Image: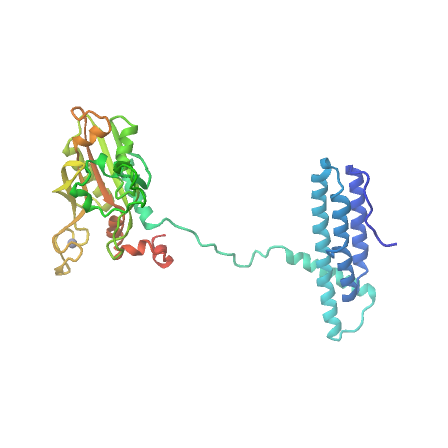
Length: 393
Ligand SMILES: [Zn+2]
């Protein structure tokens, strides 16, 4: 008599166990009697047909009618039965296929006992094939790597961390107040024009200091840090900044900066020079020299541009007998801006300018990465071309 799925009244473990055993033994018995393709198809339909196959019946009459507290158990059980039934159907399909092939290729008829033993050989082979063949080559998964800009940024931050600086970050969308006013750029001051700013539209109704823009430098983070902390304070602020510059080999509307700020009661220009000289040697090698040139920034007084001796020609201005292109034969490369914090800035953050002094500096990360890695186009950092990026992995 062939197997039918019975309704379950009792969902105890023992009852379920018994029902499952009955089902699986029926599966084995029916599988053993299969001898050809037609029989296999009937077997498959009987067990796994979506409409009224035995698996579907089990789901309908066991799983769906199980009481809430046994639902999870019966669910797991059902999944196990399903996997076993499907495995069996597949297994028999493969062995049936190989008999059929042999029969077609004209082998002599076998007795049913012989054919049965060959079927179990086939089944054993299938089981073996399921195991992993460790002699096959593995699948290599490509590894990601740090982007050269991030790598350079981490390196610079690392130099200042070792000097006792902490890292601060701030928003990329800033107010006019933090980006300009608190840094001693008064409204309508011509120094604002040197930073081609991307303003957010539709804010004419707000007072100017509250209007939003994409920060043009990471200096607003210095103001935010001084508002949060009292001196002494040493912070570096790495981050992305935006300017309305058309992209070309040396300009990009997005780039990265690292700014630093140190404020204490006894800081002098000597500390600034010593700190930056150390940082440049740490980044470019101990033979690099630095020099400071007078400059102007609204938030520092006095201000300076820092130049390092050309790392390509060793500061001589000539390479292989011809003028060095990297430093335009001057022997020096301009790298960053710095200065002593303008006392006006302390007024915005409630520090006493009579008691504290400090210095600030800022550098472009791409500019340093370009020098370090000999890259000739800043756009390469932003194009996302893996052929370029994997050279830094
Ligand atoms: Zn040079």
